[in-house]
Length: 363
Image 1 (tube, one colour):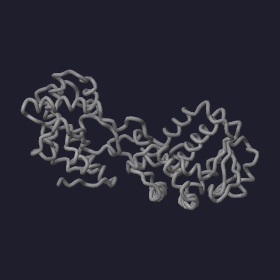
Image 2 (tube, helix red, strand yellow):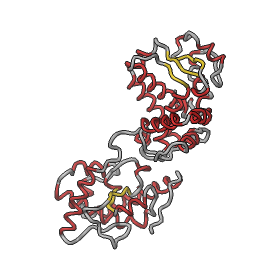
Image 3 (cartoon, helix red, strand yellow):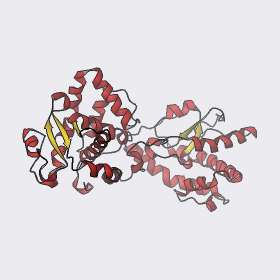
Image 4 (cartoon, helix red, strand yellow):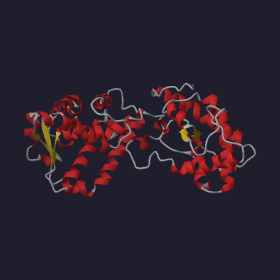
């Protein structure tokens, strides 16, 4: 599965789907076979999360369109886990038998070439969609192929996959290594097609706590409370007429989390919950707000240094952008912060807009 030899993401998601389904069936002591529709649902569920970040899968890849069409049949936001996506799809299928046929039709492209092409190293001469010839050619697992095809109903997608029993113990014993390999190759593939996009590896799969801002809110909360108690409340960078209430605020990602995929402090600013909600994943005019962001961040950093609490973690966040402790504590800290933002934000702004993130027009 070298990225240089793969032209579509289907093969990566086919491999990852087979691994997951094999693990689930084997751990239950069941025969390791599943319908074509089972694999397609799993592939869509795995692709759902990275596609929510507006990543390009390549101009020939129709997986985005397929996932979008499936999304018309289920009510999801786009940030769900694969298990949540799969559960929603299966609930929809269960509520209406016609949905299975509709989903089978939508995912036809996913199963047209990859299931047979994946077996090309075993030199069976198979190509194109799974049909009677493919069922016959894979019977008995010739050449030690990892899986064979079985006939299936229309509702199942027309065929089934049965894993080779000789392969199953190996797959289970090495499941995490193999899954990691699949995601590594997928990351290489996507990075080549999204060369300027940050955090590709963070956008491949959902992990618990991805969006939790609890540690950051703890730091900002102390600062906001201290400033308010001292009669100098922190002002919103978007609307300086608004003083931030320490008991009722949101931490806004200046460039949206769906673009940067991290919660580093240099990209966070307190805002009213209403404004944060209206801004959502839109892109602000960065040059208009950088001066106020610099002033706010400089005050925040001075306060955190005086308190010392969490200082090492804070330094780590800014060090990712080349701003070191000596810079933060120097007399020219604000100037260095401004230079950092001037170098980072305008290019990132243009990349985000090129990915079709919408422009935010401050009301």
